[in-house]
Length: 69
Image 1 (cartoon, rainbow, N blue to C red):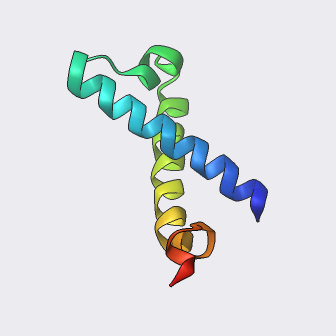
Image 2 (image 1 turned 180 degrees about the vertical axis):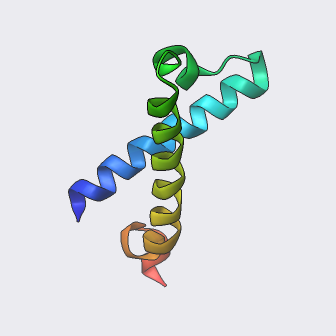
């Protein structure tokens, strides 16, 4: 489960950075990296979304601040 947590965290960070770049500069990093393969780009977006849901559901288990309650 730790491996899944680390991979999903990395994907959430990629998604957040991508949205930050889109908002600030209109630059889509995911499209720039894998834009030549639309199916792969869509897969990255689906994985980022699934990772966000995973973190939302398991947040209390992994967060050292929230787990102290």
